[in-house]
Length: 439
Image (cartoon, rainbow, N blue to C red):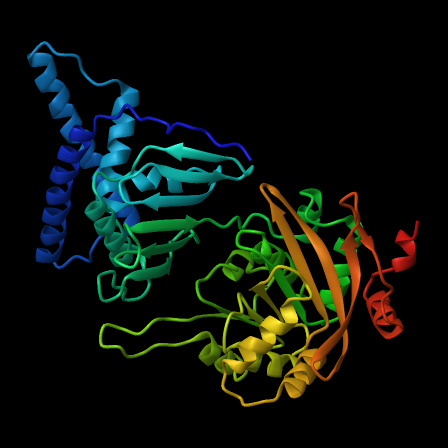
């Protein structure tokens, strides 16, 4: 991982941008009032951006004429383009954050008040960029503007609601905090929906050719799968690729905190699907919908498979019940540091549902619901599947499982334990021939 020790500087005239943005805000407000006076609908997003570009261009023409009359140098074409984009972003977008969102090489953005911004690139490098706000209060206002303009639901961001979790129009996930953090903080994680198949992940080194075939067969054979790993390890990316192995005629229901799986990006692969998203309580403290609520809803929506974006609480119990009662082929992700540690964490999550079940019964549920657990390791820019475990049975407080794939001392993913014969025959019927990969 490479870290640059200085932020990249911009030569843009910030004072001019602020003046143009102020003028543009007035012009756009007048335009909306005029349209309403003529009983016209409010402009669409594209119409408003086109009008904004025309308005800024007119202002820059007047500025150039004034500078020429005073014998001063005029802006270059490059400067005009940069200033126009910055002014429009400040009024209709997210200000100086907007260029970072539009940079395809950036995967994560970390903002802390008016300090320098840290970005993580697709290749694993980290860089410092110049601050995107002048003051901490300006960052709070920027987050509020995002919540007002870009959220599908009513959102607050203040002392009473000091955290904001929402999805941006491009699918990126925004999380912000204030008051509970020393300074207001903003983190944006961007998703690459163009990575959508196991083959692509194999070419990028996340999977071996054998594991690609194995996982494709496991999905087609309707095995229940848990994907574990740390933050940013690629769990959602792998889950999305597994989902895209599901036959086109099956009905899917996805359950998420924020729409990250992006089934609407692959409409041709999943024409019959519903995507559910949790929501916080409104300003009166009413209307909260949890992941556990959504999981129960999903079972009434006639799914062939239920996909939970990330399990981390009481939703584990209805999900496991769904997996063990006929909705085979369901999948989820969760945070864990190995395949083995998934089992006690899921048991703890089930206990959060206040079921009162003894641990022996919980483990019996786990062993009957789960078939495979996958763990992705992440070190810098190196992400790879490091372990695959087959769930076999339970013995009281212990889950019996076999680690069928693991890394050796050279870092190679190899088969370490044979599949059960029944599993081997099932996967063979769906295209996985383990004899093909014997040394």
